[in-house]
Picture 1 (spheres, rainbow, N blue to C red):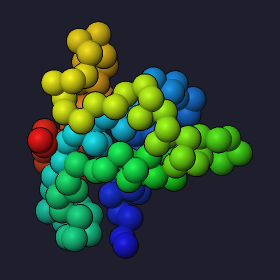
Picture 2 (cartoon, rainbow, N blue to C red; picture 1 turned 60 degrees about the vertical axis):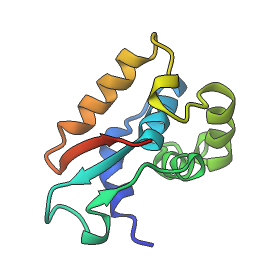
Picture 3 (cartoon, one colour; picture 1 turned 45 degrees about the horizontal axis):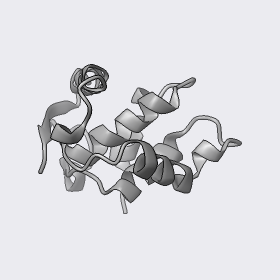
Length: 121
């Protein structure tokens, strides 16, 4: 499997990152598809669909900068997501978390390789 989409995400995951923000990145990856501009990444990944919880946890763990922490394990994030932010649809995200989630979405949308971020059901 080509991981160009994971390589793209790395610049958006900067250490130190609070767990709350990391979980919101997972919410974003789980609920939104990312459409890339033509020619910016491998054509097989021109549109990355919303990820499963497990895949979002795997992406986050793979990109976690400190490889010596538990946070570099997908199991850590998969458990945290299920216990802290188990939002299957954006409408389930609490109102107090939405401003930060939208801020992260907007940050990602400003990447010149991103054409669109599309909410999925």
